[in-house]
Length: 455
Image (cartoon, rainbow, N blue to C red; front, side, top):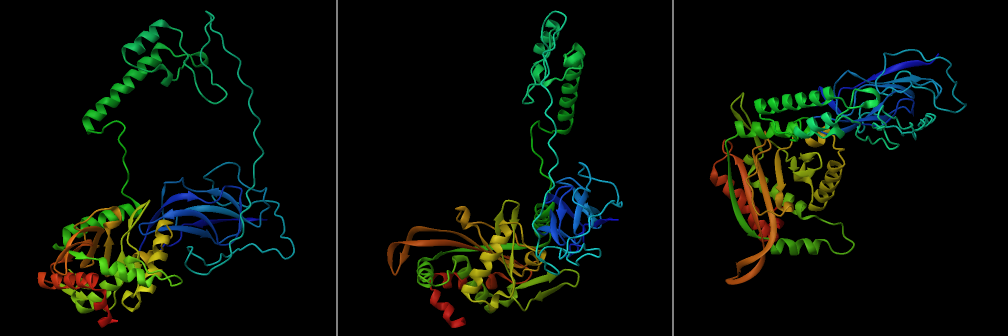
């Protein structure tokens, strides 16, 4: 006898207690291998694919796409050791576990069913296993229904029927019904009749009028505008909103800014990116400048312990950088950025950016940053006053680099100018420290050779 095993949403780590189903990766009746991803979920930290520790036939799925599922709730049931045709019928949700009869023994050399599970929790965590190619069991096509013949009314008029492509024509023959609908600005094509063969009756039109009036009363009472779109603040978007609000509530932040001539920095980057050499991004150069500046001003690589009323200076720079994705703003974190060269920073930031846009960042790659670099210049803007990434104490913002008139060596010239903004927690330092940090960053942008002293 094949055994149906229930697979529940596993512990997602980082204190997460629920996830939202984004996309099912398997169908009911599909054969899955051990550790094959069966569903993509969005947590408050990241998008992850959840692998099933059992191999067999999927007999049921639990939860529609967009539904929120708590940790420990069932996701799928899998018939371990079942033949491919021993599957559930058509449901996207199913009953509890049950035995599936007539199991087919595995072929010689084939992989045995996994009765105890693989131990893998999430893709990117735990043990790794090759994912077998999925095999979908296609149901037999349903016979196409015959097209209905036209239905004639007593006076010879033909009420509406469904056309071959599913469209619906208007089914009404009463002039009174047409007049009432016209007087109340109703589209009869949007009303489903309750009469014989779908005929629209007077009562159908009057019911539609009452429903519309009731909807108008709700709109007037609640202030809801018809057609407005409401987007739940859940998942990563909800967490970002809460962090922004908490930052504004708890942190007395201040911002200072300065314009800098980035012409020499751009020239240095061109020299680094000679043919055949690994590419170094401009953001990576700015990140390297930040790590050197934080070594000079360590009080800015800190956080405030409000419970203990203490400033906590942190030994390592875990550098976050803002990345815009289709699912909202995320801040991947480069661990131990102070120990990485510009080339290494560039490679790691590129990897994290690709993972962010694909929705594949792990919770660990989005957590515990100590300082953030925000390049809003990619949006074509010059300046901004960033909101601190709570509980961090500082953030450097970088605007676009644009050709502008600039006094260079005593003469007016066209130079590549960038505006740098620096937001800081006024509890960890005063304006002198913040201004010193920003001035050092600007000096390194204008004269990259200054970095040689700290390399």
